[in-house]
Image (cartoon, rainbow, N blue to C red):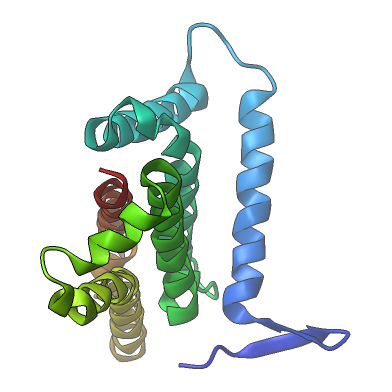
Length: 214
């Protein structure tokens, strides 16, 4: 679905997903500044939560990729934070989840895809990387290429489909029974489901990159 254009900056169209992506970037940047300006050796409060998040992402990456995966921790952390905020911002009345737009999820999946293959080329060399597409038999080349491209499709559509469907269902319920049912559904689709989809997308990002480099 084509994103709704809200306004133009000169001739540059600003769509709803782009606007809320900028808002999320601003919130994350401000939160990062506030949470890191007075770091304590013994973490407390919000610092403790942030360190748990960073440690969790680092353990996830190192478990799946080994020590060489440490360089991917910032990328995976960025994906987790952005997808998490994008999924959860939709519970705010009048707000919009950028992950409800296929362009957003496709772009994230494409970044993971390109990073994985770029790293594989640097690690293995170009010729061994190309050779991997014709193994075990040259006749399987089209299937291997299709399999790689399907990764982008499945990775992006899984997140987009779940978030978009949740948003549509919530909108319908709000129109039918705005003061009775939404509180329960809001907790499920807006918060719990958003967190689950963030975890799944993040885990798949780690797995897909790991498959390319190992």
